[in-house]
Length: 125
Image 1 (cartoon, helix red, strand yellow):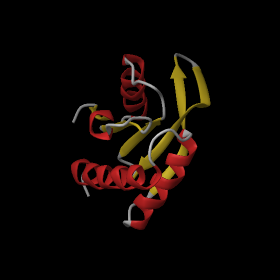
Image 2: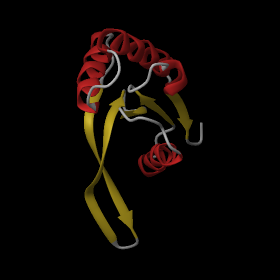
Image 3: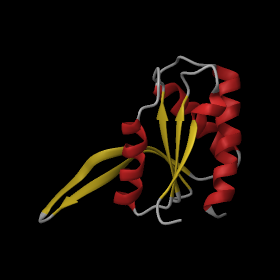
């Protein structure tokens, strides 16, 4: 599957989780449920994936943790916050750059309007 096909499956799973759980839970609850939905649809999903940081001669093995990585191609950054801010978008873009992956999905589950809280971010796609 390419990134766009994976993205379609991710969006379906996000809506399924939201319809079942609703807004306002901890991010870890959505992470658990979304991982289950994606794996149930046959996708390979890793959670809390360590992302190293390389800076000049320095290397930090587990500097960051990616919430979910699907098929080793798409990062999902989960939020359960009152509002998505510019820094959340920048965070995902930085993760894409550091990981050299091409597509990321930012989703905020703490909302009454899920459609307006799913964002697609690309890196050299």
